[in-house]
Amino acid sequence: MTWKALSASALVLSAALVPAPARAAEAGRVVTGVSEQDRSAALAHWTPERMRSVGDGDLPPAEQISWPHDQVPGVGRLFMSTSTGQDHSCTATVVPSTTKDVVLTAGHCVNGGFDRWDNPIKILNVVFAPGYDRGARNGVFAARAFAWSDTYTGPTSGLDDDAVIALDPVDGRHVQDVAGAQDVSFDVVTGPVDTTILGYPVSQLAKGEALLSCVRPATLEVNSVLSAWETDCDLAGGASGGPWLRGFDPATGRGTIFSVTSRGSMNGDLVTTDLSGAAFSEAVEALYAGAGDL
Image 1: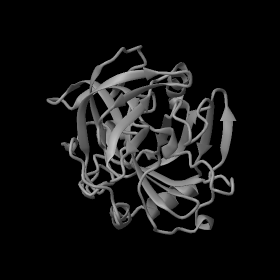
Image 2: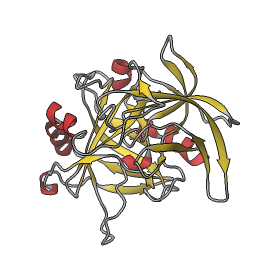
Image 3: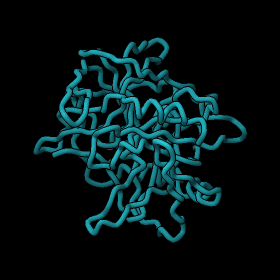
Image 4: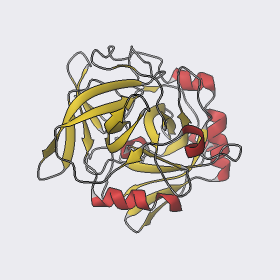
C-alpha cells in the first residue's frame, strides 16, 4: 500500500461557500490564484479547533524510528480542504525568495487530482502555520497563489511532485521574517546522503500536532520514469511535503533541502516502511526561480 495524500477528518465545508480559485497554465508551470475573498474564508475556516480535528479518527500506529523534534526555522504545518468536503494537512518549509513569502511542499498537497467519476478535486482553504506545535504557531498565513511544474501530472505521479506557495503577509510581516527559512539546493547530489527528514505525520504518536524527525541515509534510485530519493524512514501520512535536509546542524536547526517527502509505503498494519522524494529536476528549479512572481 502507498499513501500519497494526507490523513483527513470528515469535517464538511460546502464548496459553495469557498469558490474554487482560477487555475491557469503559464510558461512551464500551472498556477492557481486565490481571491482576497477566498483567503479571508480560509483564515476563518481554520480555527484552532479545526486544525486539531485533522488528527481525529482512526490513525496509523505510532512511529518507531521517527521521534518528536524541536521546532526548526521555516518548517510548519500546511492545511487545506477539498471540494469533496474534507480537511487535510501536509508539511511545508519557508524557502528564500525575493518576496519572503514562499514555502515549498509536495505537489499532491495542492493538486487534488480527480474523483472516481473523473471530476477534478479542487483544493481550497490553503493556509500555512509556521512552527506549529500542539496548536501554538507563529501566525497563520493564507495562500494567495500556488503552482507546480507542468511536468507534474497529479497525485498518481511521483515525477516532480513539488509545489511552491506564495503567502500573504500577516500584519505587514512576511513569513520568512517571522519564521526564518531553510536553504534549498538544486545541485546534483550522489547518494547515500545522511538526511534529516521533518514532518507532521497524522499518526497515533503525533496526530499531526507535533513535528517529528527521522535521521536516515537516503539513496538515489533512477529508472526510466523518474529519479527519486529513498529511505526507510517511517513518518506517516501528513509528513508529505516535509523537507529532506542534508548538512543539518542541530545547533542552528538549519540545513539544505534537496527533496521533499512525496510518497510512503505501508505494510498490512498501516505502518510506513519507507519514504521517497522526487529528485529535484530542471523543471522544479525553474518553478522555484519564478516563485517570487506568484
